[in-house]
Length: 119
Figure 1 (cartoon, one colour):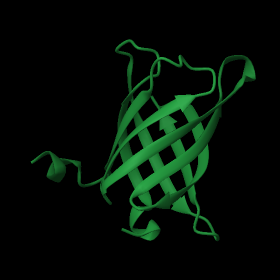
Figure 2: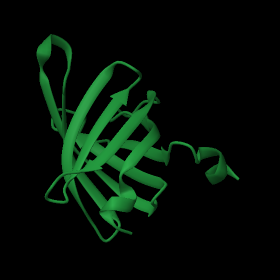
Figure 3: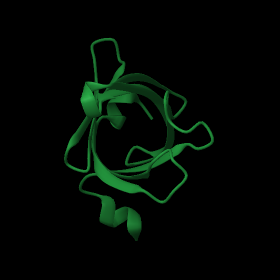
Figure 4: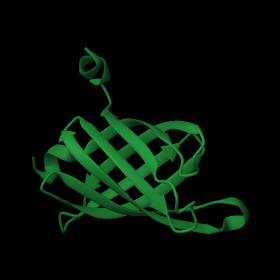
């Protein structure tokens, strides 16, 4: 798989890094910059924008991300995805100030083919 095959728009489902069952949904947009680095843009639950940059090698995608939370506090973390196919990513993530006993989890399905993957 190449970085250009990975770019596109994905629906996501995930669980937060807090040990409970707090689930979320959203979208993820992956593009490549001029240096073949990944540029990521998440929209979580239609209201939280998260941005990141990263790299791709051996079907593993690593993204350093950040977002502004309450009171304009800047949160930072790292997301790691195993690229099962160019249309399906499975990952985990951790924030600097998250609960260190847990990892967040996320699955990404390329928009437009989610029904095909379910069959």
